[in-house]
Image (tube, rainbow, N blue to C red; front, side):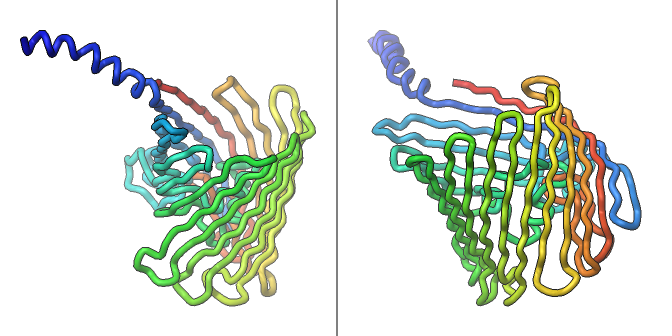
Length: 349
């Protein structure tokens, strides 16, 4: 009798469970980005094999009914070289032989008609840095200049809300509490507008410094796609960096990219003008991206940073592994890089 009952219930339970299983999804994705770099810190030059923000991630969603969907993402940095040095994922020096490195975006949350709520580690400065960054994770990355402000690229231990799209507008608000450390909470707001070929972004950050003075950043970004040619323009203003009153800086970046054959030629220039004398810097980057397949790209890039006598900005130290900065204030670092990028994305339903 019990055996017949069990045999009868098995297909019933299976039928009940099937819709729930079908409602869940799993994405396994990653980017492998390696490069051969010839870099100069303004005094010495050397050759490096670098892993540049390579990553492995898992993401997915689950339909919970009533218009609600559970979402999640786990993403970690990967060091392709295994050399135990910085792999461009924002962490410190790693132990030799370690492949999985620092935490990238990772969260759990829910979405619906109201928008999306996330708990975990999400983009901070990255919310607008990559709106106008032709050299992301390459030498000449915009973060070499804008990232020096101290606004975190990603915000850990945060809660965020992203609105649905309304007539081309959407926004994201992020808050990270103090968690027992006075004056260390962060608040970041990003508003986006997109219409046809035009994209505009406005970002604002208030970052706790552990002092009575918060650090702030205001950014305005824009891009326009003409088809085979597109342009970018951005402005970032940083205030009281590190909690120091009057430690301010303004930065402007502009660039253009044009299709050439199967690939694209790109150019990007960024200038920064901090308060004080002899602290200015200009970063110049030029490169070519050539798709080898839908998933693979070969890139060539050159970047250099011209520092005033009191400045020491790098040319390849944001998102780029085995990076070098200026050897000393007033030195002008540069890097030439040949890279290969492979991206994959596999879905399991």
